[in-house]
Image 1 (spheres, rainbow, N blue to C red):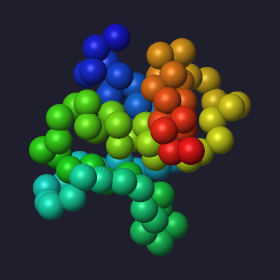
Image 2: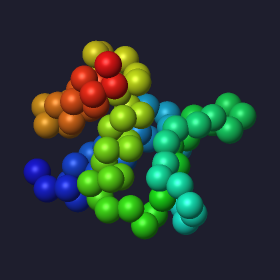
Image 3: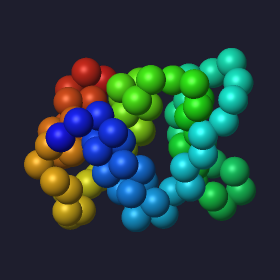
Amino acid sequence: MNADEILKNLEELVVRLGYKLRYEKGDFAGGGCRVGEDKMIIINNSLLDSQKIAIIAAELAKLDLDDTFLMPEIREIIESCKNTEK
């Protein structure tokens, strides 16, 4: 699976989990936040796909995804972020 496919799978997962995903311009990398009742992940549009993947995966690693179906490669990427945060 190439970076574009991984990114698309992660984006679809974010939406499936009830988050809003936005790509914006600015002097930031990105991350998760809450705006009122909306759960969001905002990412700098100018980042490389690999950086976007890392940010989304790090945010998803904070969630309990044990009961969520994930393709094995996507689960592995998210799990690898859990291991680096400890």
